[in-house]
Length: 289
Image 1 (spheres, rainbow, N blue to C red):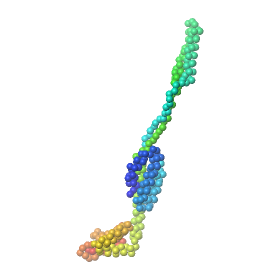
Image 2: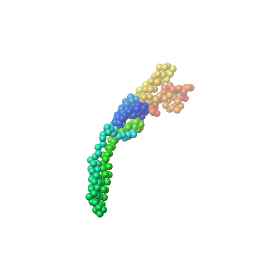
Image 3: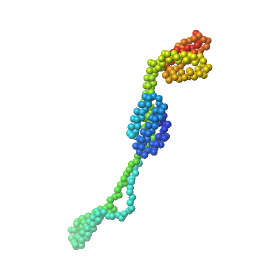
């Protein structure tokens, strides 16, 4: 069992929990809960204490770093506008100012025309009239621009970013794959160390222990029709297997691992006891000449 398998088994439930997360902080909390659940399930099935300790450290590190994970989805921008009952529009002060100036200019032009009778005087006062008339037009123009007051205020804008569940799952999936690789390296190293130790200590068995097992096996092989003898062989085989030791029956390929007794038919009288290719105890077989 590895961490990747545990995550894949819980994929649908985990994705649903992320979809319900409203913010990145909520998504981070869900990732931490998922990592805790995976660690609990992993420890229930893992037998190596060294691997358990390494898995704990890796998951704690991944949990602490989950806040830095990229989980942003699409971003929505929307505005907020307050609507009020429509009030009677009031003209701004500048409107009235420009309007008064315009009327003043027009009025002054009319007064000048009335007071300056005659063509010559009218011509002489023409520049003044033009200036006043032009000033009046300009003032009327500016009064028109100020008729409706200032423009409406822009809406207040807000942004909302959703959480991308698939992106979160992919990030976590890549992380646990790296975890499994490191844990597998630890398992391999531990197995190599254990094999070396077993080779050096003959599986942790003394010569007397090996001789005892050999004698019990020889007695059991001599009575193979007895269910009790078959059960004894099965128990011993399993016990030695845990110590990386195998029981090897006779064949022409492994003839060198057996002492041979003359017989017309070939048969295993006592199996050879072998540790990873290292012969611990020769077997005994019939059929040799």
